[in-house]
Image (cartoon, rainbow, N blue to C red; front, side, top):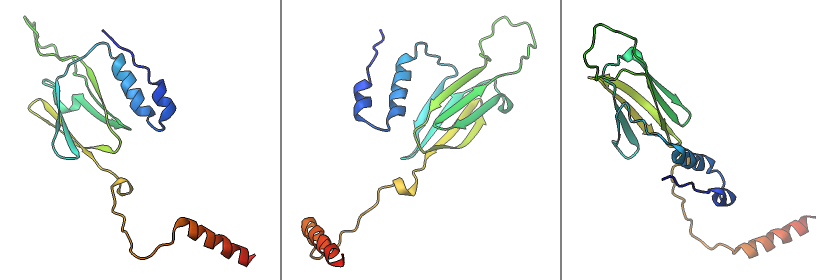
Length: 160
């Protein structure tokens, strides 16, 4: 059962959240779930994450990790090696492409392939201007805004 949500009321009252609404709409449209190759997503720190994908049978040359704006694309394609007459072929070697939506300011810091597990490390790095900062509060007598505005108008009248 699929439920369609109408985000139009949110579009009218919010600005700059278009990407979030697009993500929600795309998630509701996904009809078939492709769960190959299997993967884990782990949070390894406050601002760091790790994706581990089981890519047995794929060599480093057969894999590609691309970091696009707000998107991580992992793909793999094995070269056809038919070395025998198989009675059973249970190790999947089909090509794949897995896409991960990344939040703003999430960067790929490294990728490693060991024992058939591809590990991709991610880190969120907020720019300095986006980090919370402390505002110093000064002490002393401050004129109210109305008094300050009246004083400015009077000074402008005298100057003219």
